[in-house]
Image 1: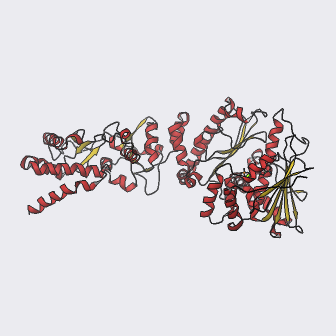
Image 2: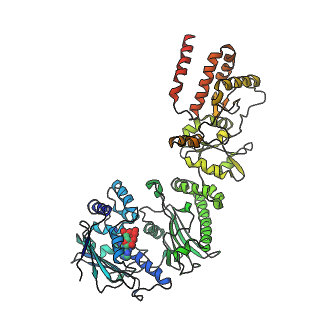
Image 3: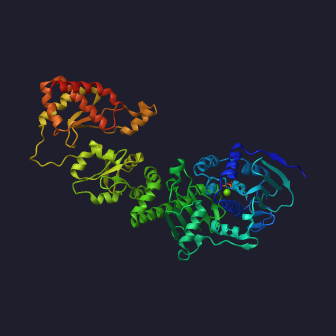
Length: 614
Ligand code: ADP
Ligand code: MG
């Protein structure tokens, strides 16, 4: 027999193991869940290979089972599966190196979560949880591939691992944990753990010879036979989540495709936490056989927050994962499922708007992405959007449909205003005319919203218009004239255009200002100010059209403007200074001035003149 080869763990794994062994104190029992789900994965992979013709399999007649054996006197727990097993190369790759980014993300999370072991399975590093409870782990494995022999992999989790060939192994994997203490070598303790975490594994789990789990897949049962708890446990098992899901949908359809599905929307969207894009986690089955885990293309990208299972009898069993990716059948399934999910979310939103608002706060960014990228579901998605508005209070939100019901007859468009906060929106000169008329304005506090509404363009036939670009005037009685006559206002506009020259496009009198003396309005087709600032930060000024000139609007009803008009004929020099200052104040109000210190010189001169005149 060849002597054992010694190998060192990859540096990242060594670091991970250090944490697993020394800083994870709570919920150590999850190692059972992790090893049992690895066993189930291995069996599922074999089941899949058996369905596809032409694959030669070692010991094809062996049934797919999972066995767990406890031995209190030897202080061991053993997990045995009859799945695909591992070759020597796969052992090195799967248990000695980390090919994916999971470990890094895990290391970061675990430091923050202060030793919460329950996180471990979410990051694709579940196997190593064995070292929380064992000081020696042995893996006996034999691949389903006919030309391969068996192997033993051994490690104490500290000094590296050893491998040597093993004869007489059956297909599959046997993992023996030499435990630090007897807790997890006790049958009743382990039975409780399996029932709690692994009840939905789709293979029988025998504990010391007795089956302990419910094998019938949940989605094949009648809804009336399933308790709320069972759904929640199923979700937690499937999503590796600690919390119950926000929403659940269990539905069966016969036409146009036969579908049985259980779908969940989690309470939290992990993207908000990790800042990285998540993968969809809906597994595709055909008649209870797993065809593709985390099936890509089953749902559009913007539904990637969903977890669950879809079982369709219409899929050919022997379809390969590659051809599945772009089959017409998958596209049809995708379309049917997307429509069903949109209907479901709409129903949930109607049933409990506040709960839906919480859902939207977590997953809304995905739906917004859908509006911007997926033309085919845009209208249904638009109904699911929520916004703060001048009508809602505090954190409350409104749908576009509800906004429409509040529109007075004179109002023909839906208005929106981008701002960093509700307060900033309410202080904006662009909002004044709407406040005066009592027309509702949506406050877009998420930078994505402006982009989304511009893509959407209309909602139920009503144009969606930026408040700053809207052609809305004050609703003033005919007989109540402006304080400044039309002619005087035109004259003052001409004067200001001369003073400001190239810094502005045009200067005009406006009927949309109420409290402010003046405002700048971005020219049509101009890139929004926020985006321009971003371009500048990125050093891409030439793309941002930073020299785009705003239009300058004056309020013919405001005392400053009225006095300025008089001043322009009496003291031209002072009027020029005041005019320039008025413009810059408006620029500040719109957030377009980068360095307000530039205007302090003029401001001080004005103060000096003011004081000298007293
Ligand atoms: P994950 O299961 O998320 O991939 P793990 O750390 O639990 O992460 O397992 C790492 C890899 O080791 C698995 O992806 C699989 O390839 C392999 N593996 C683990 N346990 C078994 C097993 N019982 N049979 C076959 N392969 C296994
Ligand atoms: Mg695993």
